[in-house]
Length: 245
Image (cartoon, one colour):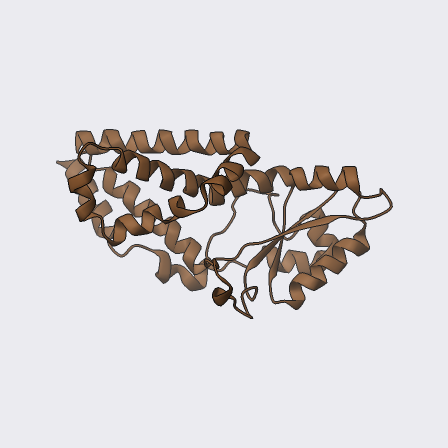
């Protein structure tokens, strides 16, 4: 995380530096988009520097909680990788989609069919190109990693579409449910020790007992209906029947 490197080079060692990154879910391009409650209920990443003192971290946590946000503690490398996947990767994909379609010899005729779907997926390509370049070059290793993951996944879809493989439906259902989980706030990290409330920093801030309590809370039990695809059971039963025959 370059900002931590800059802080280490510029700020005296006697001072504590704690980086923050609010994860705002809706676009705010103009002053008119300003919202007094924009921070309420969102996740707010906190990335302490190596020499950040406990009091400094607690102060930042209180500030984040005061504006109604939820703290998420991340390692700098985790933060950069996740930002590359969640912020910069969609922008590159959107831009590549536009260059692939607008670069077609049939674009002059094809563009007349571009409606809401094209507009939605191409929106990030309308960002300032200079800003897109800076974002792409900010963390090239992580972004290239996630581009490779998408290329692999796209090739899997390509093959299943070409072969008219019935497993394609399962991939669409998995993607539908994954997005619905995210939208419902029902994503649960099942990997032990990664960004859980019982991490060292969280336990320090919240206390061990409260951290244990949060670690056992799972939103998916109360929100299951909102992210489970209704047709999954019938589709899996149809697949089982076809395998029997």
